[in-house]
Length: 272
Image 1 (cartoon, rainbow, N blue to C red):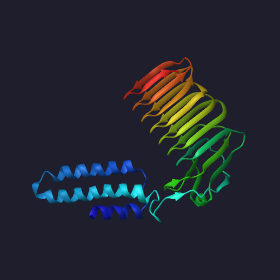
Image 2: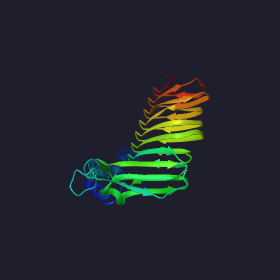
Image 3: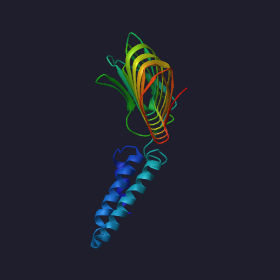
Image 4: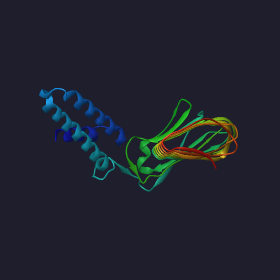
């Protein structure tokens, strides 16, 4: 009970990340270490049981906090549902060469001689919208929290692009960029990207069941890292280096030279 109470206070009073798995791994690891240390001395068996109970309570409370509090199942506790009334805001941000989107945003990026950034969200989360420039990167997200039934859309134009990062189930499309020197794509948390155009070099790092459709984006050389059941199709005629794990799958079109290919955990690389 002590563990349950303490954990509930911590996870509902402070803004804790919604990544449940990470917190469970941390708490589980702490429980194993504490149990191992304390079990070496019989005199500390009661303390061992107490600490185990507290940590167990933390884990149970975390699960309930995540499942009920943070998704808004309980009135007045966390969670925001879209109002159904979308509004579009125009941001005067220029000079970026990369884009980062999180929390389920759908981002459309096209080539243009000028910069423009238009973001559409439900009117009840406008004050939670975060659109900033960090170095050379345009970053688009909402304040940390749990959101459901949201309109999350961004339309971006820019003269040149070097990279796109998508996380938290975000989706992105890139079109109109022909003859890029290189493009760096980073995807996580079930995100998806589709690219049309061409480039000399391509680098991809995708995890957590993310997907990529690059069949209409021919490149010369590619370095692809896929993990956690991610998958995708690429097009190239130079050298392909790939590192795939955890059941990930990569298809390629064209006639590349297979360079450093490393697969594990049922992952595959094959010609389409």
